[in-house]
Length: 312
Image 1 (tube, rainbow, N blue to C red):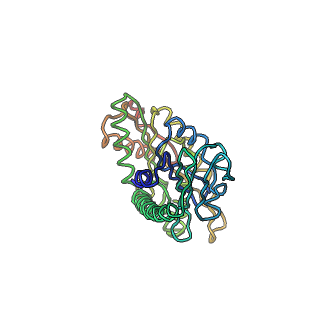
Image 2 (tube, helix red, strand yellow):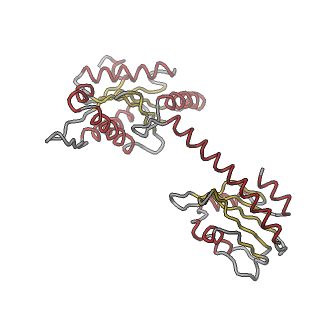
Image 3 (cartoon, rainbow, N blue to C red):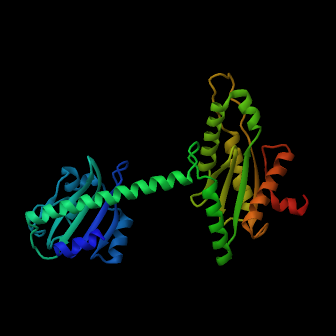
């Protein structure tokens, strides 16, 4: 909405709002007008660059170029040689949140009154971006387990339901794994809950770093975790689970009050769609039954519900 208003007020032929990541310095396109779709895709694919190369960002003040063909200009505008432009930092207090860039295709200078009005508009942009950032933070907290940083049970239910719907529609397969840290209650009783929390964090890290990008790991609750593996059958999921089990077994969690690091192991149960179940509740139950069987067989192992169905 702000860009639409800027286009009308300033007679701009094209415009962009860039967002700035304060941690990496990266710049991304948030909204635009007057640009060809293919050009935007190319810009996003190649990367827009770093905010430190932008004069408006480094100077933290508006930068106006009356004639892009002849005047000195920012490195970011080096590929443009027609028209005039104005670039303004979008700030919240002393924090840089983004950049507003407007361009006229003809060398029609932006007068001081234009600059003042554009600065007032960037204030509104900053408020909108700040609200969006707060919304993202709240949303992230709502779906994240605070101890481990993994997605939580509510997020798992949403993702599992979505994956089930998608897989039914496109006739795809997926696997679901339930995992449980072995003898965790006894560990807590011996070493205390702070040590138990550290083990939960380390196990979560081992599970999360040992997955593919499309797989997702969740803290199911307590010492239980779950893993969703799209486009994966139960045999492949069994191999993935075994690799993750080995990662956990290899963990070395040093506790200050204990001379020898304790042994940490995990048991895992694997179920799959559509081989084991075609419904959300029953596929989770199948993985849970397979997990129970892994524990019955001595823990620190992986078991597939498909083998339970075969009676093996």
